[in-house]
Image (cartoon, rainbow, N blue to C red; front, side, top):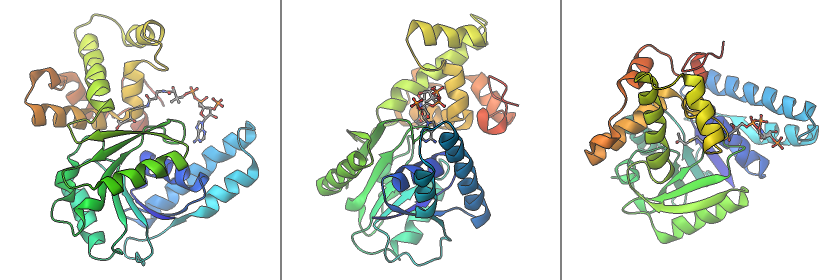
Length: 280
Ligand code: CAA
């Protein structure tokens, strides 16, 4: 299968790795080619570390790298079987991308979005084939996390759901099927919990380290909620809370003011070196 991944941030490059490791040809694009080239170089370093730790063979690394080709949005798209978008969480930006590809891709190309909470129906509205539009939601880090949420919008066909479920299994993932709803399954449960951890911190109930330690040892989570928020990106967490709040109107989804302040200050977590914890 030929897969084009639009967006080469942490999710885009991680998803590229998953497809390439399963033997698919991947084309990786970003707004500027340089960004995708840099992301690919970062993946090569990560894979080299896995080779050093004897988790994978040198040959696996070479095969994965050879199957991922950096390309431009304007390059030939006529052979793409799956277009997977993993850009930042803006309905406007995502719609622009899908509209552009819609006019050029072959008729049976599946359009998938890795959105963490935006409306699949809204992203698909007005496209030639909304029945082939679907949410294919991976989790961070994509190479390690087993789950894929397969999300159908109002117009998504059963055949498309079945194809993406099958494909997810081929990738070695476990798919769960879900109808569109704000935050789908995981983020509707997970992100309010992370937001609540920020509230606890803000109220001075406990230190950041104790909040994290409590959930690691008391709930058997692999990492504490504040460390996890840093991994996901505080901007992404805030974006999801905003969507949950806006879509439901329910005050239980109100984003923490402290979370907003952190994002405004550019403390976005691991990707900027500073979040609730320091990564510099
Ligand atoms: N490719 C392949 N394998 C990799 C890899 C990569 N790029 N990176 C790491 N691995 C492997 C490692 O080799 C290791 O394998 P073994 O178990 O065989 O040793 C395993 O993955 C774990 O890696 P590490 O030892 O480096 O790290 P760790 O044990 O400290 O675990 C973690 C790190 C996987 C992130 C773990 O802390 C964890 O599961 N945290 C929770 C993550 C989570 O909840 N993610 C979901 C966020 S929500 C989301 O993403 C949705 C959204 O829309 C916001």
